[in-house]
Length: 549
Image (cartoon, rainbow, N blue to C red; front, side, top):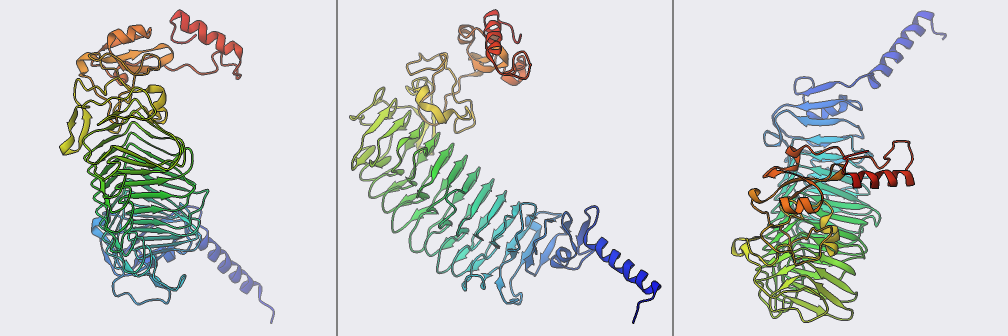
């Protein structure tokens, strides 16, 4: 039967309405429960770009983002907005509290919820994985969430990732459990990545690797822990808190690993063991223990890996390397401080010398064991410009066997007291990567001259780094901002500022207040080219004392 013109028009209008409903010109906010009765109903009603905003309360449901690039957030934060999967009927593929397995990307955002009561996906791997958050083939962002009290049998009590990645920002992951497997907090399977910033990971349990476990991660991918605390993990059957078996680049910066214990084998806190490049900086490792080597860290990685500006306090193992076990070529240990660590051999460090390695600008004092450093197997270990209790009889220059004058070693404060022999006595050239941000472990200026100490180390432009992880901070009355040519500013004594040819802004003045002239562009004549003329103009300006030509 042929449609009437009127019927055709109605059908066209119906189709147009449907298209408009599925492809809006602007994003909207869907409120739960005001606009939709449940969180999942809000997600179902949303399209890409929308926000689903959830009022405070407890929501007894499970959540599936369904491939949508939306933001799901609460109005009152995680403490007052709870998604609880306890007692929710299994839809047939398990009960992770939140599911991302439809190619969601970073614009799929979960923000401000407590996720609890999950027992994980049970279909993808025929076992329970991912109690709090299950991710497969997706790359979501999880922000300011509390993931707690979720339980699975096999992997990822808090978070499970396979063939994907997750950005965890400001999250707390605590008291999740894996009864028969690994990764009480986070488990990453094949070709997966993790970025964890500003998080707190606490008291998760598992049969083996208690906290975070990476198995067969993408060799070109990245794993990053930034400004994160990982503490209080003891696996039932033994294993480090964090195990990384294979990845591309592993970054650990401004983190705390504390009170993690391995009751049966090697490494208490952080084990990186594969073909990675690992860069561990500005972090504290305290009171971690293992039965075998590496009370805090085992690092068995590729050239280019290093540990810099880190402090190790109270770590221990019965075998070797109270704080660290190293198998890394190059210069793997720079400007680190060790005290209160213990082991039969290598109270601070054990190095399996399959490679030639160098330690520079470190302090090992107040550790308990036959030696501070133990070297095993073949290769050459060189120690330069370090303070080693009991002395160092191997290769190296500039080493001391004198009390570094820690501020309060018993209390874990390894900063330097006035008069410390570590002040202005390091090798600034060897420091290298320790100067990448020009900050010490406390965030203070990394190379800072003490006007009351004679420089005895190796300087760069009359600047000498201190030994250890903490740069001694002179009294403000002794130093101030020094404006150099072309806008650079350093904090120095007035005498050193004049040596540099700079302009001293006054005692106690910082660089922000000094208002030094702006930095010149590399293209000095701004002709769009970097060439010999720019070099000539730069030198001429430098000699004339002008800020910029």
